[in-house]
Amino acid sequence: MDDFLKQLPQLAKDKHKENKKYFSKLKKKPPKNLDQLMQELHDEEFSKTDCLTCANCCKTTGPLFTNADIERIAKHLKLKPQQFIDQYLKIDEDNDYILQSVPCTFLGHDNYCLIYDVRPKACREYPHTDRKKFHQITNLTLKNTAICPAAFNIVEEMKKRLPK
Image (cartoon, rainbow, N blue to C red):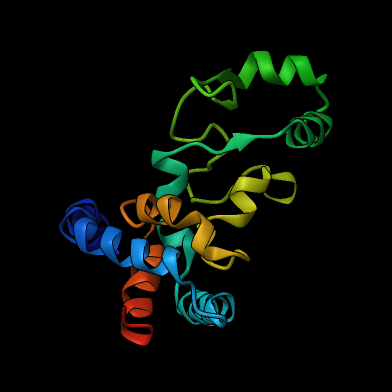
């Protein structure tokens, strides 16, 4: 996994043009079964992928925190929401709450999430490869192929099963 992770940014960069073109065609005319196919690809990939061996998403990027996330996590940590914000978050250029720094403050040395049961929605849904109306998030998926080995593999398999 370590070797693949080291190579992943370059692999994603090498495939970027091809994937962008593929997703552009896909967006124009998404197949009726796209969401079903994505769910299958997602399930297949995650039946053989253990995120705990990687945690690259937690090490290199931070999620957006919704107000519901902030309330839930603050309560779990026995903090007031504003205390949680002041201690862990900042506002980015899009006016969203994000972590003050990466790797994630809540990532343990063993790659376990210290707030797993109350983690942000963005973390629960990552890498978003099983999301409904998948064709609407292809730009996000393109970005995630450089971070998440599973997302990279899913996109590569998708191109085989759904040639454009």
